[in-house]
Image (cartoon, rainbow, N blue to C red; front, side):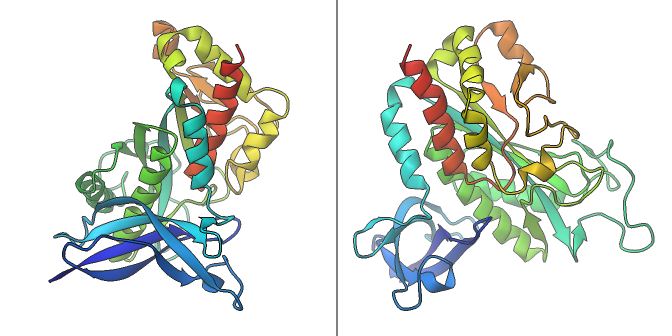
Length: 339
């Protein structure tokens, strides 16, 4: 007897990396181990020296195939040195998690995405008027006119739960055909592991419905919401006192930090962070209580309790969660450690 291990990794496509996977069939009882792939076909190597290494880092049950089959999320390594490939951003997240383990950073990421069917958002008119009714009834909506794609969302949620992922909620978003799931609260490395695995399951399940799940930051131009990955962050000090909450907000807006963070906050942030559609303009930085037009929001309950977390609303839907988690951990925790 044998089982299937689906090896999953993030490629080197720019500006937005793609997910790749392939299947290895192993004898029952055999452990998954390192494997290889053709990096010249994934923008991670040249044809004359094309081999790259897959090193398993996060393994879950395969909720699609069932049985003893597994999903195997991998880091990409360079074969000559067995060191992280330049496209491997998980390694930096691991270092940040080790460096600031005493501050106990936690993350919750809100992954927005849009279903596309036959070249248009799911649920949009097939003929006649190109646009549906304006935004308003779709956010957390109920009903066949307000919602498109719920069957896929439910299947994806079931799969994430069966795989043991830290999925903590789902909801329909502001644009018809747009949805969100949340991962967390988990640590600096774990949020990337769970988010990438949840993305894989989303793409794979949508595939069975002949639908594409897009994480484009501005899937439809015009008066329609973009898609973000709002990132909630706290440390032990923030969960215990409000001074640390304000200090975190100040750290994210310090000289040089705004540009550094925007550079890591996903492709197309200029199209999404316009100052409209519940965003602050990318050229400014401000934080505020219960302000969804701010760069960083302090939830009203946090202000009332005088402790808790912050929400950075700038990250795009297409971020690399490892990169964002490592950057936020370093920015906030390094400043706090100097106090």
